[in-house]
Image 1 (cartoon, one colour):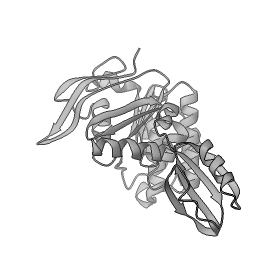
Image 2: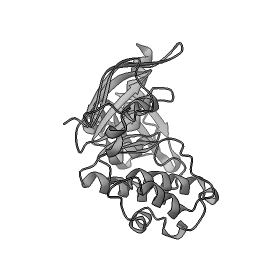
Image 3: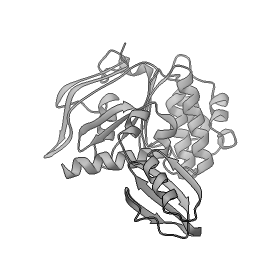
Length: 293
């Protein structure tokens, strides 16, 4: 059964078209990253899938049912961009309360330990930092052992260590068969977690493919090389930047030809590195091409 099915959905807010004839299917056990600039329609799409809004046209199905039906949402966990936690309740009390709505919740102590919240269990949520509140919000999305989780900017406000810990929790949930649809402004987050990437821009799906296929859409190769000679004028270099300590970052469509030309130029160089595009570069190129079109 398709876990999430969006078919020909359009959603308007006044004169603004947030989603324009969008279709998307997410199967069981997939981990899908939803990318797009601010205002692209990502959060609107999640709000339709979670039943918070209804489409103007088209249909949305969650676990085979209408997401606006409470019975369809029993297998859903969600972390919205902003979560309002009762300021005077303790963290453990909030987890107990939310877990009490499910037939087989994750034990509170186990969940707090998984998200590094054990020491905060007796603290009132109003006294938590923004990053700590974010960890609680994501933990609450998983307390009911959901079949599918929607994560809208899950690691906003977290430091590097907390973000890594949260990634491990998401990976563990996915490894257990869970389905994840997440949005993120951290492109490295999607690259680290997602197996499939959907790019949304101006309410339209611009790309929907595996992570590797999305990265291959960018034909440029990134070359890092250390040299005292300016290499920007070598054949095939389309973009260049000088970095500290003599390091140069160059982009070319044909890395093999660039290396041959570099050797023929008879200049001193060291620390040569070549890699494919990053997800950020692929995303920027797709959005730029669409804007130009």
